[in-house]
Image (cartoon, rainbow, N blue to C red; front, side):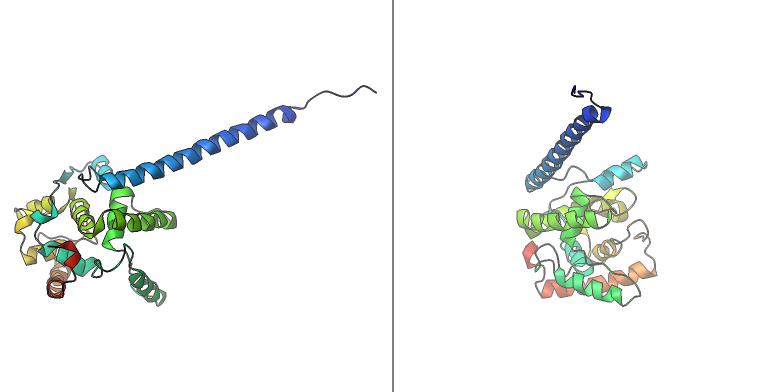
Length: 245
């Protein structure tokens, strides 16, 4: 009997498709590895150079907003501002390692009880998101944010992390950073902000495009008064010691 040497299309194209899938899988894996490597290298470089821009800044620019930002060293920013921000966003900033697991547990417990939902993000986590990531993205983005929070806490340290946060935080209307916010809202340098002015800027940070400083509404005004009190506690109790203000 003569052997049948005929081949079906599947016999020919099956291995080809498999090789193509393997090829693209390798390219995707290599792309992911290089992206991770470059992101970590970028973080190391940011120990000494100003952050050139963020994804959010790009999104605002594409939406037609004029981006206003001026990089300012932390020593040229009124100490009232970081203290007010600590009081409103992350009072244990100097104690945790980038993630405040105690605050996360408290947030989960409170959210499970219903009512107004609260988050447990630290200033370090917010900085990681602002510099490396984007808004939204669900659990996958939060996982990457968590890793970078731990990483930059180690690579940058507390003072540099706060300095970067103060320069990339959004204050609405295309305004990014403490210096641009101080100039736009109060017509003065960030170094000259009073305790009240600093507290007002800190008060709108959760929703800078919703809440206003000029003029502040009842909620912002009341929150600013609370943050002034918290900032004073942080100062007298040395909760800001890691910042060396």
